[in-house]
Length: 396
Ligand code: KET
Image 1 (tube, rainbow, N blue to C red):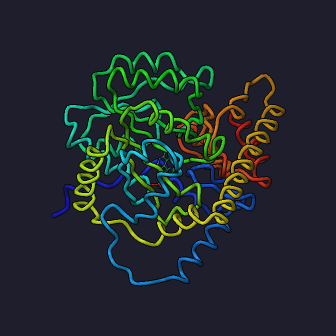
Image 2 (image 1 turned 45 degrees about the vertical axis):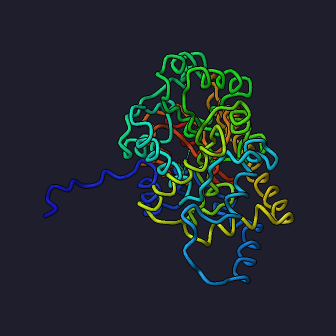
Image 3 (image 1 turned 90 degrees about the vertical axis):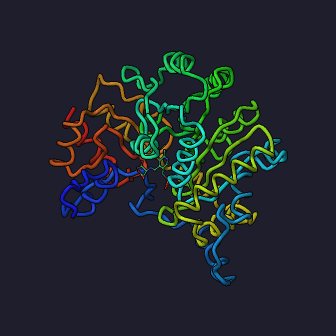
């Protein structure tokens, strides 16, 4: 019956992380998956999250199905976090927000919606992007293309080439953009570049689809929402999927949301309605527990302050690791420019290492990174950063 089912080749990120868990070597280092580890190499349980979970547990009640679109307190807290509580788009009721199963769930619900309502549109993602973007949109039946993004020569952004490609796209093309902390390169648009991009999106009638999985890991919670707020203020319609996996360290709770900013409230009602239809046909409604933890952290003023401080500390630790890796590599490999470790933002850096060098690092040094040469800087700590630099220097 199933002879025609071919073996699964594995996922470039998740399978690598599984291989790491199985590796028996002492001193192995995991810079593969986009997870924040603390300086002891553990996934932290944030105090704000622990306390919120205690509040949720103390108030445990019946567990009916949530509405298809998720819990009302979660959805409005997400809107406040993304747009700022007083944003005109929220006041006007023109943002349709759903609680989703991780931001991955949100990305896919939005992709299904696009396939249905914009069947002639193709999707454009940055070159490179998170591998799963392509899979998700192709999985929804859409054609996925790339626009120029990363400049391997400078370790920066090919902004002019990016803009000129986008200028040439047909109206209603979908443009996937990382709102901050680009995965895998760590190279972001500056505010001035967002300000130059937004009129192009508007004039060419392109549909931006933002992915905000690392809010707070770049320059701060508010600063990292710059693109979201600037787009909403510019009056363009767009999609945004956001995640709490990393910012609250609640990966397995699968907490995320999808918001669609619409021209007016009447369109937002219909968009939300059709999104609900999409959800109903897929998983019916989201789970209760994780969303209530997130909503409690976001809405309880004391927990909110605590969370912001904890997120700030995660961001600072990543920056310290960037500086340390830079310093050790600079000393070990003189004459080579590692400046990019300092300028790239968020969890990831793109090392420029080849797939063959990455394989050598894994096989001979038990150092795991994605074969594109991406490292998760948040996997570095004071005990492994030196060994990481030594291993990288050995294959250069
Ligand atoms: N968007 C981006 C850009 C992203 O890096 C991830 C996860 C997600 C969405 C998914 O997040 P969630 O809300 O948990 O569904 N990235 C890391 C893990 C993974 O591949 O799933 C990673 O790149 O390693």
